[in-house]
Image (cartoon, rainbow over all chains, first blue to last red; front, side, top):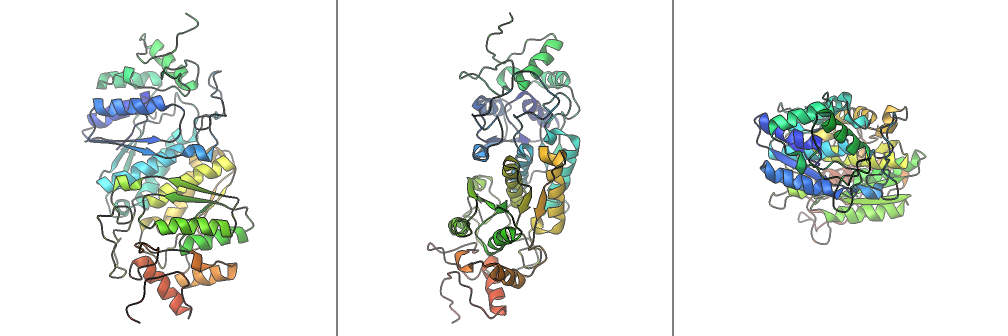
Amino acid sequence: MVLLSGGLDSATCLYRARADGHEVHALSLRYGQRHGAEMAAARTLAAALPVARHLELTLDLGSMGGSALTDPTIAVPKGGLTETIPVTYVPARNTILLALALGWAESLGAHDLYIGVNALDYSGYPDCRPAFIAAFEQLANLATRDGVSGRPFRIHAPLLHLSKRAIIQEGLRLGVDYGLTRSCYDPDPAGRGCRLCDACRLRLTAFAQLGLDDPAPYVPDPGR
Amino acid sequence: MVLLSGGLDSATCLYRARADGHEVHALSLRYGQRHGAEMAAARTLAAALPVARHLELTLDLGSMGGSALTDPTIAVPKGGLTETIPVTYVPARNTILLALALGWAESLGAHDLYIGVNALDYSGYPDCRPAFIAAFEQLANLATRDGVSGRPFRIHAPLLHLSKRAIIQEGLRLGVDYGLTRSCYDPDPAGRGCRLCDACRLRLTAFAQLGLDDPAPYVPDPGR
């Protein structure tokens, strides 16, 4: 069971789960995020692997407010990464995503959940840290029929300690076509990355460090 | 922040939260459950208190399958409570509900979450036990911006150790109109309780033990 947003990290997780020998199911959540381009990318990636089933759920987190990713009245920061948790933080997002993945996994009889969180080159979100992943795994095995009856769930976060550069190297080795992925928090209407949000900066920098061109589409670079 | 299903337990929680001195927000999830009568009851109860805001979210858990409460091809058991976890168990339901409540609470600046789980007169669901509640509270404070910055969340489960009878006594003291609540897993088209599912049996028995009539509507009792 792979949580698939359509971004670089979750795409790498998708291929990692297959390489680990699993029949792969992918879950995507349309949660009112601005970046609908990610959902289209998730669908393309799921079909490319292909997965056994790709379930798209819709949930209006925008009605809760509180994040630049769900509330169009809050601007996405473009000034570069900072030391504090940015307004692109979606309250409890990864808790909600893992809870949904857990529910579907138990219904299917799956026990391995993959999430592409990363605690190194990331935006400082609290729900991307190792302690969060460990706590969710513990919760999952108290919360469920399978968990309490000796068929425990494992939360796999294979990118947790990798740099963005190392993630890309791993994904290329596994056959990920990063041209199919979308990461931007604020893409243009054609789905092209803005180059300036945290997500764009992190991946563009990593590809550049590797001496590679990021194959995803971006708006023209004004600096060139 | 009160998770409000419209049943007897969550209605009691709603009034408990107000009695604890809080401005009350209520969250209800329409998750494809058969018992839409519960959602109508939740709306009536929220208006009766009244709450500051009642947010209804929709999520198609039915597409995941795995429960008699979301899958119309699985029959709701009517034979009485058993020792095993019944098919009315919805995989990871309370984890999903608490995750959503946590997200909205953090957006609002609320830190007290109420859930009407009960580990005494219940259907044997794993996510109704004290260990689950404690693990979720721990998770919540690792998963969120507020949790990691010294504004911790508390998960209140004030009914956890009460018998159904004691819950009703507490609710009557707090002013709950149980005629507005609906608990049945398989109500008739008019929203009347079936008398035979676990939820109906538990509440009918408790009202009878108290020498009271359950004011919620039920189909006629064939035994009378």
